[in-house]
Figure 1: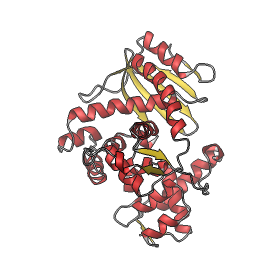
Figure 2: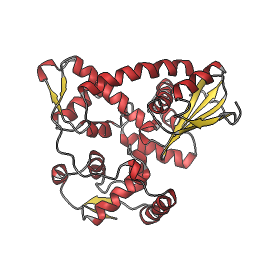
Figure 3: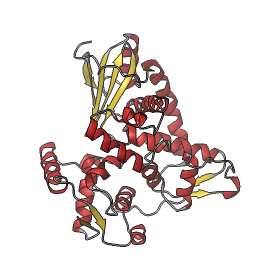
Length: 333
């Protein structure tokens, strides 16, 4: 198995995961497609950790998604982490923001989201490395690969049901107030979701506001739909947005552009502030991600802090901010 690598066109991820589970593999499984990179660390066929450059799969984003922490608490934890070099989960438990059990459970979800998202890829490459995973930690979860393979089969069926009711992320939602459960807990995901739906947010905007992965968002939407609480409204006309992933420039050009943006906006970090009123942003023909970013540019955080907290990649944030400055929507302090 040493040096095992290939493409998903030749060996689908489901087959690979079942093979690694049978072999009780130890080491790491890395998956790449375009600019997205994911790695799962294994010990005898059990996933014990994961890394991803998709911000929605970061531990902090998942904790916010489930209502365990606020943006302010996460920002303070990041500051402590930079000063102490201690892992984020341990920082949050040390200061008493969350319990070790919450961190362990959320890291288990992180493993699932990191790998299960790649099960739907129709292209990409993989590599299996027998290098031992990082040293174990008492907060590490244990997720058997066999369980992940079974859950992937369930998700395939679930997505068919989700898309049948919510085919487009650009649609707003209709709330039937008469069927809203009266006992929704304050701060719960469903309560926050319904509050945003009442404001007219689209499904894509909901995902950004809740820092939610696609599956978790649509899972809750579908559950509320089955209760008669939610239904999809009409989708607005498509607004011009950023170039699709497939239209990225050559890697070398993209890397050079990214370096230039980092030097311009992050060295030192600049602080963005709106030059227009907040209610004007809501009326602009912008993508959900662009509206989310503008909502965070109130002069209280610099760009490095915004990147840490946003469910978007660093490059997505920097490109959007650059465009907003040139369009006179933002000024930089």
